[in-house]
Length: 160
Image (spheres, one colour):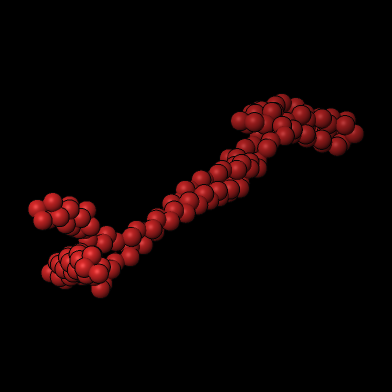
């Protein structure tokens, strides 16, 4: 009888487990990389510039001649004007070097975003500790009943 009681206690300890249901967690990760490319342009303003030439003119034998140059100033980028007087015609040339006024460039912006979604499943209808104890006591009682029923059947067949 004590041997049988040891088996019953061992069977009880093996079958009994105390744990509560844990919520199930699902994790979803979404990683998005956004590359924005922007084209920039600009206009450079160049300050105004001028050059000047002042001279005195005189008439000699019915023809106009340059008598005296009073002032000839170059500008920041302009050279001094070239002045020619031919057949009573005055020609003035001012030359300016070619200048680039437009600039354009590209820039990139990289933006990484990571969206993490965690879904938690909670159990609403779970058994309390006392309900679990009652279930396990019922199982143990059923095992004891089966044990005594098998013993009774074995005695009954040995009599005949």
